[in-house]
Structures are given as structure tokens and as C-alpha cells.
Amino acid sequence: MSSNIPLCLTSPLRRGYLTRLAPALLRHACWGGVILFASLLSACTFPETSPPSPLSPVSSSALPPSEPTVNLVMEALANKDFTEARIRIERMPPSRDRKLLTSLLGETEESDLILRVLLGLSHPSAYPLAEPSERLYTLYPEIFHSFFLSLSNPGQKKILQELIQNGKERLAIRIVHQLHTYQGDTRLIASAYAHWAQRREKENRLFDARGLARQALKISPRNSLAHSVDRKIEKLRKEKITEGLLAYRHRHLHQAIALWEEARAIDPSQEEPKRYILKAQAILEKVRSLTPTKQ
Image 1 (cartoon, rainbow, N blue to C red):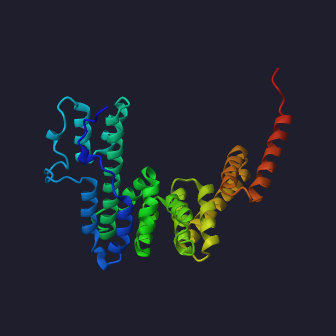
Image 2 (cartoon, rainbow, N blue to C red):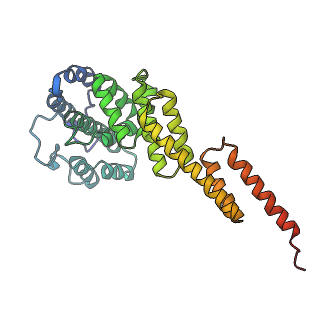
Image 3 (tube, rainbow, N blue to C red):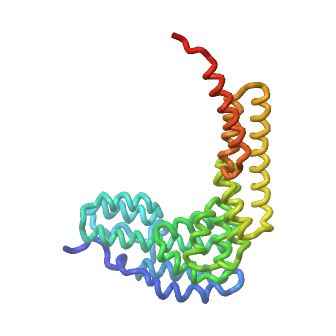
């Protein structure tokens, strides 16, 4: 079955060549090779002999008018609306066109994400770095691995730091473990756990926050953020116990038990709130046994 997609749009992206070329470009100071790399990336993705139109890398007249779905997919790709392109491709029946469009979508989106990451590395104040890095990892993990390892150490570290600063600490830790990079940089890994702990503390997930903070301190005992989070949670735990004791003295046993349960949930390894809970429950049980039941 013949395809309705121009042959010039279906050639595969030369990933091997680009992967070998990237390190040489990225060694130069101030990321001088970014523009050249982006140009080669676009040329490899859309190897047309005629110059592209300002709005689209593909002329709509090159597509048969009897294929509206193909036109719409190509228009979405030209506008970098990859979600729309993916939805329209998924609605197509199995065909050669669908297979070619799927391949073209992958290559186009890969190229766009890599370019956005490079722009984020070279102009961090103007272009976000965490979002395209996360998306490239999620959608095309093998491409991300090859691309990430081709970067210089400062480039790799910048991506990891941006992920940590933008609430993607778990992803940064996963990348370090999967690619065996920066394993010796304990401060970077501890920073990821500490920021993760701080985020969980703000979400009031105190048990998780304390565990993450202590993981950070286990890796780097001098991490100030992890110490701050751990001290804040410990202060809150002790306040719950104190408030429970005050409620207990005023015979508000149910309120006291609730407060001690909160303290216990923060750190189940602490025995103090457990003893108080058992004592209050014993008093309540005794009161119930002495209260006559209604007939």
C-alpha cells in the first residue's frame, strides 16, 4: 500500500551522528555550539531541498487533498502541538501512513525537546530546563540517556540541579542511579532528598518528610536544609505531645488521644505517645465499665 506522506519527511533522524557530534559542540565555552547543533538537528529531521515556509517545515500543498487527517497531523507538527498530533494519529486506522506519521512525530518531538534542553542550558534565565528534560526522559528514555551522557559534567549537573529546584527530585535521583553519574557527589544527591523532604513537609506529609530528611542527613550529615526540615518536624511532634498532655489534664481524653496519635504518626518509633495513648484508653475503658447501661 502506497503512502500519502512525502518521502522527504520519512527519513529517520541520524541519532548516532548527532550523539557523537553533541559532546564536541558542548565542550566550547558559553555553549557556542548550540546554534550549530540546532541547525544540524533541524536539517537531519526535515531534509528538504526547498526552503521551509515561515509557519511550517512542510508545505501543505505537498500533501494530497484527499487526506485531511494527514494534513491535520502535519499542521499540528508544524505548530509543535505534539499532543494534538498524537491524538489524531491514534484515531487513524492501522496503515502505512499511521506508521510513518508515528515515526515522524517521535523524531520531530525528540528534536524539539533536545533543542529546548540545549537552549535551557545556554540561556537558563530565558528558557526553562526542567520541563523539557523531564518530558524527554518520560517519552524517549533511551534518547535521553544517550543525550545526557553526551553532555559535559557541568551540563549534566545543571540539568539535575534544575530538576531538584523544580520539584522533580525523584527523577534526578533516578537519573543518577540509572546512569551511574554523580554517584560520588554526595552533596547533590543529599540536596535532592532534602528538597524532596521540604516539599513533603509543606504538603503536611510529615512521616515521609522526616524519612527523606534523614536519608539526606545519612548521605551528607551537614546538609543544612535537611537539618532544618528535621528540626521543624520534631518541634511539631513535641508540640502535639504537649497539647495532648494539656487536654489530658483537663479530662479531654478523646482530644488528647487524637493529638498523641498525630505525634505518633510523625514518628512511630517514639514510644512516649504510645504510652500516653494506652493510659488514656485504659481510663476511658474504666469509665465505660462503671457507667450503667440503659435498659
